[in-house]
Amino acid sequence: MAQFGAAKGIKERERSINFFEIVKYKSPTVNDRMDHIDWQGVLKLVQGVPLKERVFVGSKTLIGEALEVDGRLHLKLMLVRDEESWLEVYDEQQDSVENLNLGANGHLVETTIVAFLDFGNVIGLIQGSTTAPTPSALENWINGLELLGSGVIIDTQVMVAHEVLQRLRESSEASQITVKAHTNKADALEARGSHLSGLLRSVSADYGPMTVTIILQASKAKDQTEGRKAILKEAHTIAEASGAHEVAKAKAKLVYIAADDTSKTTEIDFAKQRITAKRSIPTTSEDGSPIRNESAVRAILDVAAKHDDELRKIAAQPS
Image: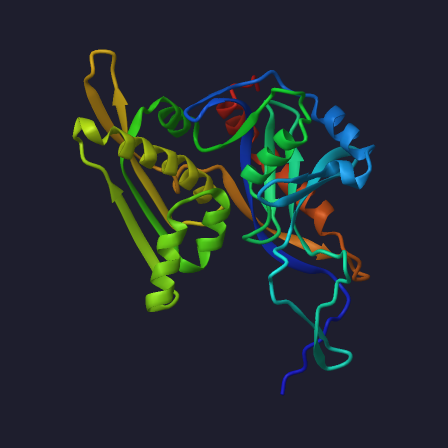
Protein backbone atom coordinates (compact mmCIF):
# COMPACT_ATOMS: atom_id res chain seq x y z
CA MET A 1 0.00 0.00 0.00
CA ALA A 2 1.25 3.49 -0.83
CA GLN A 3 2.75 5.46 2.04
CA PHE A 4 1.20 8.83 2.90
CA GLY A 5 3.27 11.32 4.76
CA ALA A 6 3.48 14.98 5.69
CA ALA A 7 7.04 15.66 4.65
CA LYS A 8 8.39 19.14 5.17
CA GLY A 9 9.00 21.42 2.22
CA ILE A 10 7.05 23.77 -0.01
CA LYS A 11 3.38 22.90 -0.48
CA GLU A 12 0.98 24.70 -2.80
CA ARG A 13 -2.78 24.99 -3.27
CA GLU A 14 -4.56 26.55 -6.25
CA ARG A 15 -6.92 29.37 -5.34
CA SER A 16 -9.03 31.90 -7.25
CA ILE A 17 -8.26 35.62 -6.99
CA ASN A 18 -11.12 38.05 -7.49
CA PHE A 19 -11.40 41.82 -7.35
CA PHE A 20 -14.12 44.04 -5.90
CA GLU A 21 -14.78 47.73 -5.44
CA ILE A 22 -15.93 48.98 -2.04
CA VAL A 23 -18.71 51.54 -2.50
CA LYS A 24 -21.22 53.41 -0.34
CA TYR A 25 -24.59 51.70 -0.03
CA LYS A 26 -27.58 53.91 -0.88
CA SER A 27 -30.41 51.48 -1.65
CA PRO A 28 -30.83 47.87 -2.86
CA THR A 29 -30.29 49.10 -6.44
CA VAL A 30 -28.05 52.16 -5.99
CA ASN A 31 -24.48 52.51 -4.72
CA ASP A 32 -22.21 55.55 -4.80
CA ARG A 33 -18.47 55.69 -5.22
CA MET A 34 -16.48 57.18 -2.35
CA ASP A 35 -13.23 59.09 -2.25
CA HIS A 36 -10.41 56.64 -1.72
CA ILE A 37 -10.31 55.66 1.95
CA ASP A 38 -7.07 55.52 3.92
CA TRP A 39 -7.29 51.77 4.41
CA GLN A 40 -3.80 51.67 5.88
CA GLY A 41 -5.03 53.99 8.62
CA VAL A 42 -8.19 51.92 9.17
CA LEU A 43 -6.19 48.69 9.39
CA LYS A 44 -3.68 50.36 11.73
CA LEU A 45 -6.57 51.02 14.12
CA VAL A 46 -7.72 47.41 13.75
CA GLN A 47 -4.19 46.25 14.49
CA GLY A 48 -4.14 48.18 17.75
CA VAL A 49 -7.32 46.89 19.42
CA PRO A 50 -7.87 43.70 21.45
CA LEU A 51 -9.35 40.63 19.78
CA LYS A 52 -12.78 41.05 21.36
CA GLU A 53 -13.13 44.47 19.70
CA ARG A 54 -12.44 42.96 16.26
CA VAL A 55 -15.28 40.44 16.48
CA PHE A 56 -18.68 41.09 14.92
CA VAL A 57 -21.52 38.75 15.85
CA GLY A 58 -24.44 38.81 13.43
CA SER A 59 -26.03 35.81 11.75
CA LYS A 60 -22.44 34.51 11.78
CA THR A 61 -19.40 35.39 13.87
CA LEU A 62 -16.67 37.25 11.95
CA ILE A 63 -13.18 38.13 13.18
CA GLY A 64 -10.77 40.56 11.54
CA GLU A 65 -7.01 40.70 11.95
CA ALA A 66 -4.60 43.14 10.33
CA LEU A 67 -1.89 41.34 8.37
CA GLU A 68 1.39 43.09 7.54
CA VAL A 69 3.12 41.98 4.36
CA ASP A 70 6.12 43.79 2.87
CA GLY A 71 5.47 46.91 4.92
CA ARG A 72 1.74 47.32 4.13
CA LEU A 73 -1.33 46.20 6.03
CA HIS A 74 -3.99 43.90 4.63
CA LEU A 75 -6.78 41.87 6.24
CA LYS A 76 -7.23 38.32 7.44
CA LEU A 77 -11.00 37.83 7.79
CA MET A 78 -12.17 34.75 9.67
CA LEU A 79 -15.55 33.06 9.99
CA VAL A 80 -16.25 30.92 13.05
CA ARG A 81 -17.23 27.49 11.78
CA ASP A 82 -20.58 26.00 12.66
CA GLU A 83 -20.31 24.30 16.04
CA GLU A 84 -22.54 21.50 14.75
CA SER A 85 -19.89 20.34 12.23
CA TRP A 86 -18.67 16.79 12.85
CA LEU A 87 -14.90 17.09 12.60
CA GLU A 88 -12.20 14.63 13.55
CA VAL A 89 -8.39 14.63 13.45
CA TYR A 90 -6.12 12.23 11.56
CA ASP A 91 -2.74 11.75 13.24
CA GLU A 92 -0.43 9.84 10.90
CA GLN A 93 2.20 9.41 13.60
CA GLN A 94 -0.31 7.61 15.80
CA ASP A 95 -2.13 5.97 12.88
CA SER A 96 -5.46 7.06 14.30
CA VAL A 97 -8.50 9.22 13.77
CA GLU A 98 -9.70 10.95 16.92
CA ASN A 99 -12.47 13.32 17.87
CA LEU A 100 -11.53 16.97 17.57
CA ASN A 101 -11.55 18.48 21.04
CA LEU A 102 -11.29 22.26 21.10
CA GLY A 103 -12.15 22.59 24.74
CA ALA A 104 -15.01 24.59 26.21
CA ASN A 105 -14.15 27.87 24.45
CA GLY A 106 -12.28 26.82 21.30
CA HIS A 107 -13.67 27.40 17.81
CA LEU A 108 -12.52 26.54 14.31
CA VAL A 109 -12.35 29.40 11.82
CA GLU A 110 -12.26 29.59 8.04
CA THR A 111 -10.07 32.27 6.53
CA THR A 112 -10.23 34.74 3.64
CA ILE A 113 -7.37 37.08 2.74
CA VAL A 114 -8.24 40.61 1.57
CA ALA A 115 -5.53 42.77 -0.01
CA PHE A 116 -6.20 46.51 -0.30
CA LEU A 117 -4.92 48.23 -3.45
CA ASP A 118 -3.81 51.84 -3.24
CA PHE A 119 -6.51 53.27 -5.53
CA GLY A 120 -10.27 53.40 -5.95
CA ASN A 121 -11.19 51.38 -2.83
CA VAL A 122 -10.32 48.26 -4.82
CA ILE A 123 -9.64 44.98 -3.04
CA GLY A 124 -8.37 41.59 -4.13
CA LEU A 125 -9.71 38.55 -2.31
CA ILE A 126 -8.77 34.89 -1.87
CA GLN A 127 -11.05 32.50 0.00
CA GLY A 128 -9.29 29.70 1.85
CA SER A 129 -12.27 27.42 1.11
CA THR A 130 -15.62 27.67 -0.65
CA THR A 131 -17.37 28.43 2.66
CA ALA A 132 -14.77 30.94 3.91
CA PRO A 133 -15.86 34.60 4.27
CA THR A 134 -17.24 36.19 1.08
CA PRO A 135 -17.30 39.88 0.09
CA SER A 136 -20.71 40.04 1.79
CA ALA A 137 -19.05 38.91 5.02
CA LEU A 138 -16.49 41.70 4.62
CA GLU A 139 -19.36 44.19 4.27
CA ASN A 140 -21.02 42.84 7.41
CA TRP A 141 -17.78 43.03 9.41
CA ILE A 142 -16.91 46.60 8.34
CA ASN A 143 -20.49 47.85 8.77
CA GLY A 144 -21.10 45.94 11.98
CA LEU A 145 -18.03 47.38 13.69
CA GLU A 146 -18.65 50.83 12.13
CA LEU A 147 -15.02 51.00 11.03
CA LEU A 148 -15.75 53.92 8.70
CA GLY A 149 -17.91 55.79 11.18
CA SER A 150 -21.49 55.70 12.37
CA GLY A 151 -24.03 55.78 9.55
CA VAL A 152 -21.56 54.84 6.79
CA ILE A 153 -22.71 51.60 5.17
CA ILE A 154 -20.54 50.03 2.50
CA ASP A 155 -21.26 47.49 -0.20
CA THR A 156 -18.99 45.59 -2.59
CA GLN A 157 -19.29 45.31 -6.35
CA VAL A 158 -17.63 42.58 -8.37
CA MET A 159 -15.16 43.96 -10.92
CA VAL A 160 -16.18 42.65 -14.30
CA ALA A 161 -15.23 44.33 -17.55
CA HIS A 162 -16.15 48.03 -17.54
CA GLU A 163 -18.83 47.82 -20.22
CA VAL A 164 -20.60 44.88 -18.53
CA LEU A 165 -20.47 46.54 -15.11
CA GLN A 166 -22.06 49.69 -16.50
CA ARG A 167 -24.82 47.68 -18.12
CA LEU A 168 -25.56 45.89 -14.86
CA ARG A 169 -25.69 49.17 -12.91
CA GLU A 170 -27.88 50.94 -15.42
CA SER A 171 -30.43 48.16 -15.92
CA SER A 172 -33.86 48.48 -14.33
CA GLU A 173 -34.80 44.81 -14.37
CA ALA A 174 -33.70 41.43 -15.73
CA SER A 175 -36.06 39.21 -17.68
CA GLN A 176 -33.91 36.07 -17.63
CA ILE A 177 -30.87 34.55 -15.99
CA THR A 178 -29.12 31.30 -16.96
CA VAL A 179 -26.80 29.67 -14.45
CA LYS A 180 -24.80 26.48 -14.85
CA ALA A 181 -23.31 25.16 -11.61
CA HIS A 182 -22.39 21.92 -9.87
CA THR A 183 -24.46 20.84 -6.91
CA ASN A 184 -21.33 20.90 -4.71
CA LYS A 185 -21.38 24.72 -5.01
CA ALA A 186 -24.63 25.03 -3.05
CA ASP A 187 -22.92 26.08 0.20
CA ALA A 188 -20.78 28.69 -1.58
CA LEU A 189 -23.81 30.19 -3.33
CA GLU A 190 -25.84 30.22 -0.13
CA ALA A 191 -23.01 32.11 1.60
CA ARG A 192 -23.40 34.84 -1.06
CA GLY A 193 -27.14 35.03 -0.52
CA SER A 194 -28.16 33.26 -3.73
CA HIS A 195 -31.62 31.70 -3.65
CA LEU A 196 -30.51 29.09 -6.21
CA SER A 197 -28.63 27.09 -3.56
CA GLY A 198 -31.82 25.37 -2.43
CA LEU A 199 -32.50 24.14 -5.97
CA LEU A 200 -29.00 22.68 -6.20
CA ARG A 201 -29.47 20.88 -2.88
CA SER A 202 -32.80 19.43 -4.00
CA VAL A 203 -31.25 18.07 -7.20
CA SER A 204 -28.35 16.58 -5.25
CA ALA A 205 -30.71 14.92 -2.76
CA ASP A 206 -32.86 13.40 -5.49
CA TYR A 207 -30.28 12.55 -8.16
CA GLY A 208 -26.84 12.76 -6.57
CA PRO A 209 -23.99 15.19 -7.37
CA MET A 210 -24.19 16.64 -10.87
CA THR A 211 -23.98 19.80 -12.94
CA VAL A 212 -27.26 21.68 -13.25
CA THR A 213 -28.39 24.43 -15.62
CA ILE A 214 -31.05 26.72 -14.14
CA ILE A 215 -33.03 29.20 -16.23
CA LEU A 216 -35.22 31.79 -14.53
CA GLN A 217 -37.45 33.70 -16.95
CA ALA A 218 -40.05 36.28 -16.00
CA SER A 219 -43.07 37.30 -18.01
CA LYS A 220 -42.93 40.62 -19.84
CA ALA A 221 -46.29 41.60 -18.36
CA LYS A 222 -46.37 44.87 -16.43
CA ASP A 223 -47.63 43.14 -13.28
CA GLN A 224 -44.47 40.98 -13.18
CA THR A 225 -42.15 43.87 -12.32
CA GLU A 226 -41.25 42.43 -8.90
CA GLY A 227 -40.24 39.13 -10.46
CA ARG A 228 -37.93 40.86 -12.94
CA LYS A 229 -36.39 42.97 -10.14
CA ALA A 230 -35.79 39.78 -8.13
CA ILE A 231 -33.99 38.24 -11.10
CA LEU A 232 -31.86 41.38 -11.42
CA LYS A 233 -30.88 41.08 -7.75
CA GLU A 234 -29.94 37.44 -8.33
CA ALA A 235 -27.91 38.53 -11.38
CA HIS A 236 -25.77 40.77 -9.15
CA THR A 237 -25.14 37.82 -6.81
CA ILE A 238 -24.35 35.42 -9.64
CA ALA A 239 -21.96 37.95 -11.20
CA GLU A 240 -20.02 37.85 -7.93
CA ALA A 241 -20.13 34.04 -7.81
CA SER A 242 -18.97 33.89 -11.42
CA GLY A 243 -15.93 35.93 -10.51
CA ALA A 244 -15.06 33.31 -7.89
CA HIS A 245 -15.51 30.42 -10.37
CA GLU A 246 -18.45 29.09 -8.35
CA VAL A 247 -20.61 28.86 -11.45
CA ALA A 248 -19.53 27.49 -14.81
CA LYS A 249 -21.90 29.65 -16.83
CA ALA A 250 -23.75 32.85 -16.03
CA LYS A 251 -25.78 34.92 -18.46
CA ALA A 252 -28.52 37.50 -17.93
CA LYS A 253 -30.95 39.42 -20.11
CA LEU A 254 -31.06 42.95 -18.74
CA VAL A 255 -33.98 45.30 -19.28
CA TYR A 256 -33.55 49.06 -19.67
CA ILE A 257 -36.64 51.24 -19.28
CA ALA A 258 -36.53 54.72 -20.81
CA ALA A 259 -38.32 57.85 -19.58
CA ASP A 260 -41.11 57.30 -22.14
CA ASP A 261 -41.70 53.80 -20.66
CA THR A 262 -40.25 52.02 -23.69
CA SER A 263 -37.82 49.22 -22.95
CA LYS A 264 -34.96 47.34 -24.58
CA THR A 265 -33.18 44.12 -23.62
CA THR A 266 -29.52 43.13 -23.90
CA GLU A 267 -27.70 39.93 -22.90
CA ILE A 268 -24.46 39.85 -20.92
CA ASP A 269 -22.16 36.95 -20.12
CA PHE A 270 -20.51 37.33 -16.72
CA ALA A 271 -18.24 34.29 -17.02
CA LYS A 272 -16.47 35.75 -20.05
CA GLN A 273 -16.07 39.25 -18.59
CA ARG A 274 -14.73 38.76 -15.07
CA ILE A 275 -11.44 40.13 -13.81
CA THR A 276 -10.03 37.07 -12.09
CA ALA A 277 -7.13 34.64 -12.06
CA LYS A 278 -6.09 31.35 -10.56
CA ARG A 279 -2.78 30.99 -8.79
CA SER A 280 -0.97 28.26 -6.91
CA ILE A 281 -0.45 29.67 -3.42
CA PRO A 282 2.54 28.34 -1.42
CA THR A 283 1.18 27.26 1.95
CA THR A 284 4.43 26.16 3.60
CA SER A 285 8.07 27.17 3.24
CA GLU A 286 11.07 24.86 2.82
CA ASP A 287 11.13 24.10 6.55
CA GLY A 288 7.40 23.35 6.63
CA SER A 289 6.37 26.54 8.44
CA PRO A 290 3.06 28.11 7.32
CA ILE A 291 3.29 31.07 4.91
CA ARG A 292 -0.08 30.86 3.14
CA ASN A 293 -1.42 34.23 4.31
CA GLU A 294 1.61 36.20 3.13
CA SER A 295 1.71 34.17 -0.09
CA ALA A 296 -1.95 34.96 -0.75
CA VAL A 297 -1.39 38.72 -0.38
CA ARG A 298 1.60 38.65 -2.73
CA ALA A 299 -0.32 36.60 -5.30
CA ILE A 300 -3.22 39.10 -5.25
CA LEU A 301 -0.88 42.06 -5.69
CA ASP A 302 0.94 40.31 -8.53
CA VAL A 303 -2.31 39.70 -10.43
CA ALA A 304 -3.47 43.27 -9.66
CA ALA A 305 -0.28 44.65 -11.21
CA LYS A 306 -0.93 42.65 -14.39
CA HIS A 307 -4.51 44.00 -14.62
CA ASP A 308 -3.74 47.49 -13.37
CA ASP A 309 -5.06 49.39 -16.40
CA GLU A 310 -8.38 47.51 -16.53
CA LEU A 311 -8.94 47.68 -12.76
CA ARG A 312 -8.36 51.44 -12.80
CA LYS A 313 -10.71 51.84 -15.75
CA ILE A 314 -13.48 49.93 -13.99
CA ALA A 315 -13.00 51.98 -10.81
CA ALA A 316 -12.84 55.23 -12.84
CA GLN A 317 -9.32 55.96 -11.58
CA PRO A 318 -6.53 57.65 -13.57
CA SER A 319 -3.72 55.41 -14.78
